[in-house]
Length: 247
Image (cartoon, rainbow, N blue to C red; front, top):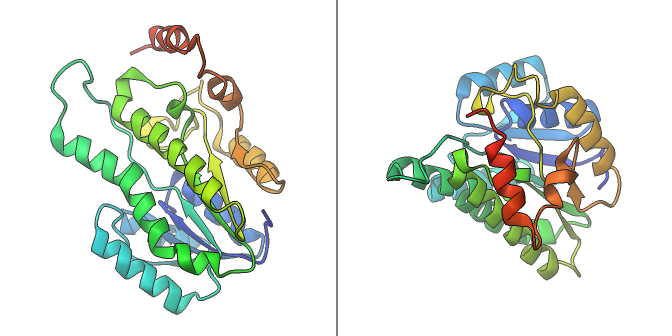
């Protein structure tokens, strides 16, 4: 994708990977609009980066998505890049009764929300000379972590959706890109100080380098190792992965 001259909307843009992408695209001369759950994080981001805009959006609520889409198309008619980045990742109990409220929130935020938002903007994006949809999935969509079984399942489902959407849009002006991060030092699962996680700056550098090519899958750090898991031996790989985790 081209890295300058875009109008980019990023969900979950107030922290972590979303904020890092927002700031980097802003530095490269793009018009960036962000949304997120925490207003304080959004305010901090736009204050630190004059020129970045924000809009209110609850990705769990269909009406909120529809309203946000209408505002985006009204206020930013040149919108040509959508980055579905918002997500929640919480430990769950796949071996016992799942917390139903957490289950619904995770599936709605990580899977239904991105599908709804993209659906609300797809006709506009198809009408642009060049447009890009980016889905932030996870290597856990290929190698699930048993501690976060629902999160992993939503990312696997989103990967499947990306493949279908990319095929259907193959003759359009819209590129569909999957960004599948490895473990990165962010607030997700309190990973900011995790030594084994990839530093956010290193991750961002690799991601931007790959985004500047024609790559349809963005795999930074050790992500290719997990991406290559599905196959005849995937069950043994997943079992070994989970058995080596410290929790």
